[in-house]
Image (cartoon, rainbow, N blue to C red; front, side, top):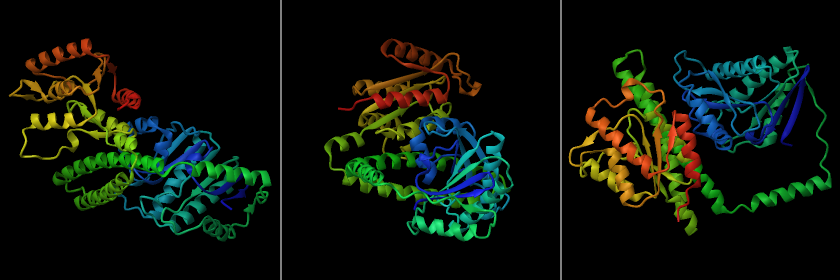
Length: 449
C-alpha cells in the first residue's frame, strides 16, 4: 500500500509514497537553497516538470535566508502556487535541523491559511540534498502538522510525499512509522481502507506499466543527460555567488569565511559527481542521431558586466534544451592564446550562435578595432553558423553604469545595431525574463542536421 490517510477533526493528513510533481493540491512545497537554484532532488524534479516560469519568478526574489518560505507561481504544474522552503543557506541564528523543519512547516501552513487555500503537498523537508536526518524530518513534520490540523476549524487536506533517495526504505516502512506516531494521538482515527482493486483496474495498471517500459534505454539516458546539464549550469551559478560571498568575507570579519569555503568544497564535490555521471552516460549512447544532437553546442555572445544576470537566466534555459552551453564563463585561463583568437576558435566549434546586444559595446581589441562581442558575431557569420539575434529595446530600463560612455564605443555600437537590423530578423527584449523566455522558445525550434 502506497497511500494511507488519517482524520484530524475536519481535516485529513495523507501519507503518499510517490512523485510530488503529480500532486493535484493547490500548493506544492519544494526544499531549496537561499538562491532558489532548484538544482537538486525534489526541487530539480519540480523545475523540470513545471518549466521556465518558476525559474524566472524565483530569480526576482533572491537571495533569501535560511528557514524562509518564498511563494512563486507553479508553472505548468496543476498547483496554484509553489512554496520554496529554504533548507540550505548561511545559518546565522545557529538553528538546529529540527528548528528549521519546524519553522518551515509552520510557515507553510500559515501561508496556506493566509491565502485561503485548503490543500498542500509537502516533501520530506530537507531530507534530500540538505541531508537532514530522515527521522528528525518525519517526527517534527508529523507533530507540527497533526497539532495544526487538530486545532484548525478549517477543512484542510495535507499530503506528505515520502521518498527515500538512498533506497534504504520501502513504502510500508514510512506507513509503519506514522502508525507508531498516530498511536500517541487519541483524536486521530484511520480512514477506511482503500477498496481492493477490481480485475479490470489490475489489468489497466499492468497495461500502463508496459507503456512505461516501452521507453527505450537510449531515451531514458538522453533525459538524464539533459537533467544533469541543467543541474551543472545551476551549480556554476551557485559557485559564482559563493565566491562573491568569500570576497566579501575577506573585508568583513563578521562573515564566516570557513563556512563559505566549506560550501565551495561541497559545490565542487557535487559538480564532479555530476560530471562523472554525465561522462559515463554520454559514452553509453550509441545512437548516431542522439550523439549528434547531444554534441551540439550553442555559443552565447554578449558584453558581461551589464548583462550578467541576463546570461545567468539564459544559461538556465539552454540547459533545458538539447544544446550544450558555451560562453566566456567556461573558458578559463589560457596563456598560449590571444583572447581574440581564443573566442574565434570557440565560436567555430559551435553549431548555433546567440548574440545579445545591450547598451554597451565592450572592450575593443586593438588589433581588429572591434569589441570581443562583434568579433564573435563576425566569426559566426564567416563560419556560416545559424545565428539568433537579440537587441535591447530603446525603452528598456537600465542603470547608468550599463550604458556605453565612450564616444568611439557608442559610435561602433550604433553602427553594429544598424547592420543587425538590416541583416537579421531579431527580437527586441525589454528585460532579462523576456529575453530568457524568448531564447528558450527559439532554441527549441532550431534543427541541427
